[in-house]
Image (cartoon, rainbow, N blue to C red):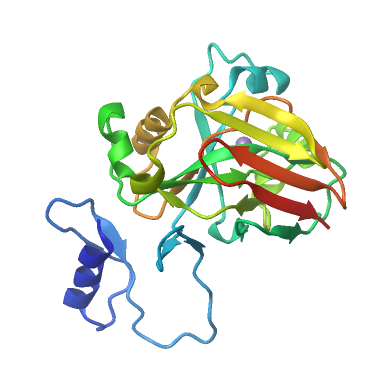
Length: 268
Ligand code: MN
C-alpha cells in the first residue's frame, strides 16, 4: 500500500479510539491499523532508514533474515545446503544501526560474547507486500536495496542451538543490524548478481557473488510470504557468504557491494 493510501485509511478512521482494528482497502492486503486514541506517557522512536537521493526516510516495520543462503556458508555452519529449504528469523526493528555513506560509525562490542562475528548481506526493502506472492511478481514489491551486517554473537547462537533453544540471544540483540542507506530500485535496479565483500582492517575476509545465493531475493520474498503476510516497510537480510569470522574492539569492517557505495563500521 502506498503511504498516501495508508494516510487516507488513517484519516477515514479518524482518531476515535481505534486500536488494533483491521482495515481492508480495495486492492490491498488487510492491515492492522493502530491509531493512538490517547497521549502516551513516553515517546518510543520509530525506526527509519535514510533513502539516497530523497528527502524521505524508509519506515522499518520488520526485519527478516534468511539463514544459510550460500552453499559454502551453509557447509561451514555444518549443514547440507542441497537439501535444506530456506529458513528465516527476525531481528527487532530497533536493532538497526544506521551507517551513513562516507563515515565510519562506532559500533559497540556487545555484552556476553567472546566470539563476535560479521556477516555481510544484501538487504531488500519492501514498499508493498501480501501473502503467497509468486516468484514472478516478487520483485515488484521491492522499493530498494541496502548493504547491511547481520552481526552475530556466534558463541551464544551455537550454544543455544546445541541445547535446541531459540537463537534469539545470538542474533536479535541491540544494534545487531548495522545498515547503509536505501538505494531505490528506480536508481540502481535489482540485484541478482554482482560482487559482495567484507574487509576487516583492509584485509578481504568474505568475497562472493550474489548469483551464488541458493534462494534469490525474489524466491526469498515468495517463500517468506507463505509464512508471513509481508507488509510495506519490511526489510529482508538475504544471507551471508562463507568465511564469517570474529572481530574485536578496534577492528574496522568495510562492506562492499557492486553498484553501491561502501559502508564502514568500527567496533569499539
Ligand atoms: Mn545472516
